[in-house]
Every structure is written in structure tokens, then in C-alpha cells.
Figure 1 (tube, rainbow, N blue to C red):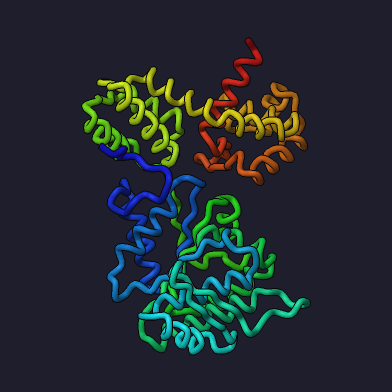
Figure 2 (cartoon, rainbow, N blue to C red; figure 1 turned 120 degrees about the vertical axis):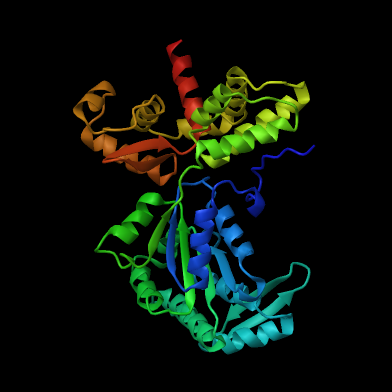
Length: 387
């Protein structure tokens, strides 16, 4: 039988666990011209939720443009991607070329169709001047999509995944320019999704920033353990392998409830159970499989470790060992031989390269390693150094 746990691609809509409310909110924003900010750490399943929402829309109402901003290297390239996605609304390639020229008149687009890849290639007859900010091209494109939706009398949904990358492409001014356009749109719904949780929260919660209170937030959290546990037990049942509660607890604790890593550990354990005809997945077997994954990625984690400064390694080691809060307290600084300045610099640097993520726990800020397997590697490295 096939392994029921997947990590290689976005989870299929029918395989989503306890994400009905998130899917509902995305659908509502896309079809009712809302503005929704989907915020969640990496590997928490945002893309799967977005795809599920798209596929759940009635086909005759499914006018959705879904772009990952991270895959573009300039605003102009992003605009071309926006136009190419709009071209797919047309029933055939010939009508697509005519349609996008009618919609994006001021951008003077040229469109060619690649039948082998079923993709559109777009060129722009109008480009931003070197001395200008490139953002007006994007604003103009979104404004023309709004005009088209209004004339067609239906709502178009625009999903911009990894939205925080827009700042790298367009600079700080792009926030003001996008806000000025998006806030007036009544026929285009927007979902701004991203994994830079601190940055996105600041964008929508900081009164000094243009996107302040522009739309509603949707925070993507871990899947509740009872729901995930049921899916895991059911997945192993097909092998005749029992998964007791203690093993489930070990699995969730080692992966820190991050959906991707829960799936990865379950998938790897399932393969091992099938190969070795396990009849019970014990906590010790879960821990053994987890350590095998840590070993598998050893060259990558070793390279990440040696690339950090001494102070950054101290911080990673401390957090891996459970010191996740009050990292600027005098007690912590003394224990790890750090100063206030060095801890701030180390935390900022580790966040910027996505080794750490910052979370709010009640009234406290806490830090976690982004990758639970890397945490396992650090703990093993620290123990080896002691031995």
C-alpha cells in the first residue's frame, strides 16, 4: 500500500486536517473582495490551505490569480506573472492574447503561448524608467484588474504568497503605493500570505506602516494534536501497526507540532514499519527514527553550525536546551557569557537566516529553532562535546 503521509508536495485538499475554518476565510476573502493577511511560520501548511480554498470555489466563479512573490526577481517580472495568470481566464490562447491586451491597455503587453508547457510568456511595452520606483507598474496592473472585474461583474481573487518579499523587490515605498490602490478595490479580493511572522505582524499592527488595519489577520497555528493523532493512527492501521498515546506524544514533542515535520517523521516511521513488519510504534522507535533523520541531514546542519559566530552558536545551543524566554535577562546573559548587545545582534542575525523564529507566548516573547531536526542535531552536538 502507498504511504499515507506526504512531504514532497502540498497536501491534497481531501487530506487536510482541521483546516476547515482557515479554508473558509480564504474563500470568503477571494470571493467577497476582502483583504486577508495569512501569517504563519514555514512548514505550517499555508500553501495547502490556499490550494484547497481555490479548488473549493465553484468553477464558474473561480477567477483566482495565485503567485509566489519569492519566485520573482523584480517588480516588472512580477507584473508579467500577474498578466500571464490573468491570461488563463480565457478559454483559449487566441482569446487570451486579445483579452490581456484589452485589460492591461496602458502596459501594452505582448503574449505568446507555449503549448508544450501550457504557459504564457508576457512582455511589456511600457517599462519603468531607471530613475523611477518600479511599483507603479504593479499598481497599474492591479488597478486594471479591478476595472476588468467591475466591468465583468464578478470578483477576482489575488493570492500573493510570501508577500513580505515584495519589500525586497520594490523597496519601502511600495507599501504606500500598494495601499493607496488596494484599499479602493471593491471587486478584487486579496490574500497576502507570508512566513516572516514578525515582519507581517508589524506591517498590519504598526500604526506608522501603510498596511495598518488594511485587512483581517489569519494566524496559522499547529494542527490540534487530537486531530493529527487520529490521522496518524489511521495511517499506521493499514499496516496492522498500533500507535499508542505515548508514541504519539513523543512524535509531537520531537517535531514541536510543526505539521511538515510531523508528516516527515510519520512518513519515515511508516516506511520503517512496513519494511520491518512492526506491530507497534513505541516511543523508543519514534526517537530512533527521529535520530536517523537528524543523521541524514548531518552535513547540512554541520555546515549551518560552522557558519555561525561563537555568540550565535551559544544562542542556538541555549534555545535548543529549553531557554526560550527572557533571553535578555541578566541571569541568562551571565549563564551563557553574553552581553545585551551581543544577544540582540545574534537573535536578529539568526532570525534573518531563518534559523530562529520569534513567537508570542502570553505576554512573553519566546524563540524556537525553525527546524526541529536541527534542534535535535544541536542537542546531540552539545552532548557529544560534553562527553
